[in-house]
Length: 490
Image 1: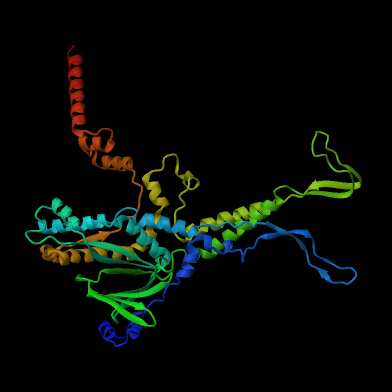
Image 2: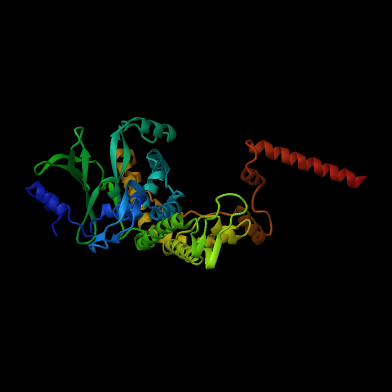
């Protein structure tokens, strides 16, 4: 395999891009993945696969004279629409896993050694807050689970206001040097956003560069295709005309590659696609059946004289020579459909270790489920999130590693601190904490109160002025003690 330096040294731009597009993993089929993700594009919604029904005026028959088959006659411009019931199972399951994985912000473990490292940590937290990484984490995890790959790209834009706010929070952080003029911004790349990603690794598996192919729609309606490569030192950009031509090349100014890339072999819901398709067909067909059979058919056998009246109390039918009148009933079919629907629906969530967050699913936990009961119920989901953390946890850790070095690159005051600070991240899966249960367990273990009066008032959250409330409680306790002592003396 050619090295990155050898690729970028090639004389032909088209040849460079040819080698930069080399992937060790297959390129995701974005169109097929989006078809599974968007319920409007499911097969059950396709009129070619599930066409509407035409209203028949006359059934097909055979001409008694010629013997030819006369096709059925349909009523012109009269369509009986078929039922098309879509199920966004992929979206529901992926969104639950996303919220479970990063609904709580990742835990940051860091013990700064000095004021510089403490200030650096504060700056990184501000960068995350300004870039709304709490929400970007969800977008990244959602893309990774549904699109199989995602990348984030960090770049700088001119903005002195960001560092003025940092200076106001961290006194003396910038020393006497000139205030930086740039702040960090984050962009997310993924297949559903129109990006084709080409990560480049060396023979040892080390990450060298990330390339992105994308299209930009011009004002006249035409689309122009671009190809962009980000390395440890530079950003390269090409445009497709009659052939690839280089349009830009610049140093991004960071010590490390400003891209973080994550990939998975298959989408989270890949294995349950046949179940979802069966559920959609089953529910749509059953809806058609209900439309046709909601009002039962009246079967008349033998000799019937007259027809039943449409109104009045004495609605009679005269039957002679052993005739019969009865309704056509379909007793067992609905039960079979219901059992299959419930079984397939439950299986789709079980196979992905996804909790069904409905009231019916929580009925067996009692009137007020404890935190322990919830943890047992969602144990499978916790294990699934722990598996996701192998990739997502590493992705977020690489982000913090980059941000540490990036702040040192932008501000020489933090260069040394960026080389010594140690930040570790940890995924915090969503959980339901039962505070009352925790307090009871701790009190039983210690045999005495485990929190101060102030902590109890804060946890209650009933008042704004905590100190004033504590003084009133202490005064009431003193008055009560004095009163009890007086009664004992009497």
